[in-house]
Image 1 (cartoon, helix red, strand yellow):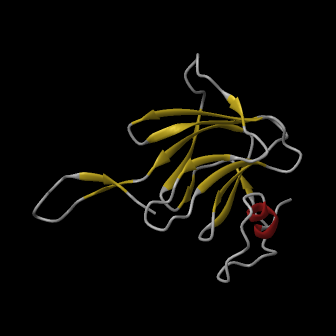
Image 2: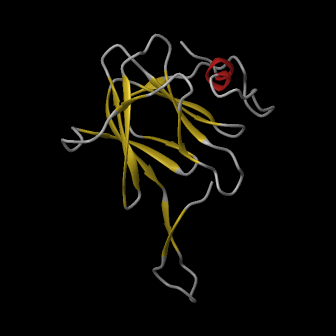
Length: 145
């Protein structure tokens, strides 16, 4: 079981004042959001992808453009079987595979804490917003967290 403090320590980050250090990070297997990212369960990703095991140092999924805070993907406690593949297509950044009895953590340094991700396949997406101003009606842009 991870707390915010143990999760953030994986990225070398201390717990920001607005988060509770000993709060438990729940492990969920449904849709989740973290800042400008969405974690979406999928039945199975396409075949033929070049998967890599998530290393101890984690994987930088996206750099926080607006704040400089990065989204890091890490394996959970006692979770050697967590794999990731970058597969950018539209707003999709890639896929995550968490084997049975394993977990993953998506950590947003200094801002949102951590999301715990349970076994399954997931697509990780950027958030997209629609410009409603009259100068560019219908224009879309990626949300910069």
